[in-house]
Image 1 (cartoon, rainbow, N blue to C red):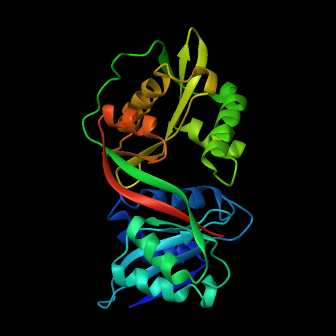
Image 2: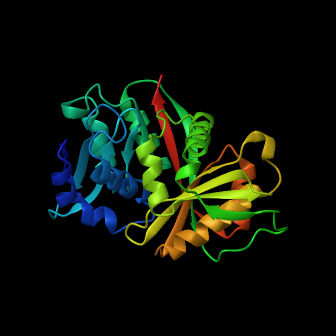
Image 3: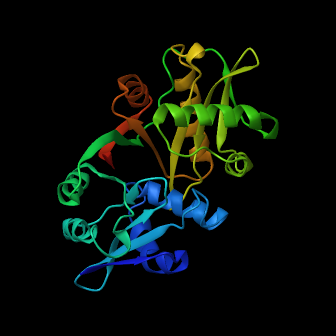
Length: 279
């Protein structure tokens, strides 16, 4: 039983893709990040080469994976408990030594890694993964309508996604190429009121039958009027239309308003994740 680490995306995909794709709901972020690296190259998220890892069990079968795309924290997918223990032991040696400044992992796994890290850490964010059951329309229905974002919307989209990232503490801003890629498959929707955009929601390309809604952003002056519920409902429908069998989203547990909105739309909790950062 061992972890294998590599900077070779092709080697990672050959070894780990089947295991990751076998659990597309809980591995949703691993799948979408890997897809972005395949489409846009190894520097899609920053100037440092990504690091990939996969866990091989006692029977020789790969049974989970991780990846690290600085400046983002190390992202740990669904792995067995023995893989978490082994990863904790590897933090102080080999390619992980001195590289990892934070983790994004299932709650129990994050706690185990923090205990073995040997450095003080703080919880940066607590996330809840939701899975859509039966989609329900917002009640009461908000005024306005949804439309797919297009190339002329690019400046507004960049402004709003950057604002979303700042509010969420996301350590990198989107590029024009990233936003254009989303526009290309209809993956960004705007909610308009009297012809004026008032809210935004996106969804990822379906991978392994799963698509994830996000970001969802409403400028402060237009909040509290149901626009986010309207555009999230529209993005969820669009994800299904794009071929998704599972529609997912993450929420910040510190925001009870958004958690309530998504549950009223038909989303149900799957699991919690924790983002930890070294002090």
